[in-house]
Image (cartoon, rainbow, N blue to C red; front, side, top):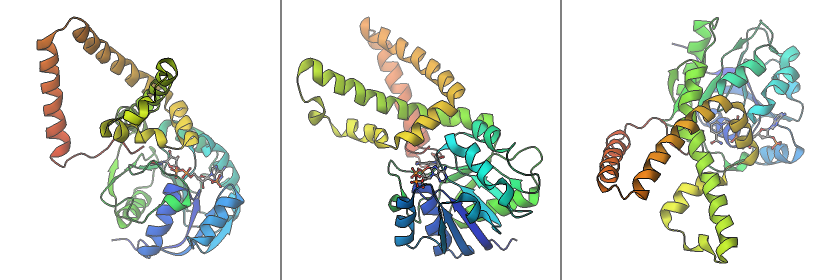
Length: 301
Ligand code: NAP
């Protein structure tokens, strides 16, 4: 069994995910010292006001000095730049991990920047909301949610176990998989649904202009629930769409083909096909999700 308490944890990025980590680390006593780094002074002041850490800086490398665990929770498009910032200021033997929603790109951005003397183990907690920033976080965010780790071929098993023990102490359940596999799964369960939600808002809003009517004020709760995803942060989601490009395009292709079949059935008034389709998908939905065994939900990224 590991002592999951670290001497010093550095949190780079203190938005929804970083601040939720800060809160659960404090609550469960997982570090003697939490150092926080973020991009803007404004967010840093919010984090200080919320008492999320012990030391605060806008210089990433300053936060990582002497840290045993470094968790990078920034938009994935800047992962490489952050790795470059901290590379020469990392403690020998430190674990460096991230929480980015697409793994292949993050690994290719970060791996080459980080020194061989640290243990880089990419990760992704499948937990989130449509809110962002340090005020949006909460300590139970990871409770009973999956955290997927995508270890590299040379990952040290003991360090992998130590990082797994940390996430378990944060309330999460651990799974390990290849980065490519992760990206494909997340494309269909999270990234494409977000894209559809953003797009349906655009279609409804464009329609308002054409028919001169306030379409969205008549929206039913289903529309409102579904489009909640479109309230998510544009920087985070722009980066996910661009950095999981291949997997998203692959899943979007499959989705479009299936949609075309549905469209055809409606056009040709194919009652039997529609009834079979709706029955089959309802059964899948009920068996797989309502039975309480869903591991990944649409609202997560
Ligand atoms: P967020 O609330 O928008 O927070 C992002 C944080 O990153 C902010 O503190 C921001 O700083 C900071 N940042 C941006 N550029 C930086 C840089 N160059 N150096 C240091 N800090 C920088 O985002 P989030 O929702 O926590 O997402 C963070 C990561 O978690 C993303 O990679 C995302 O893919 C992943 N993720 C998100 C969710 C979700 O549901 N939101 C779920 C799982 C994983 P300033 O505010 O100071 O600019």
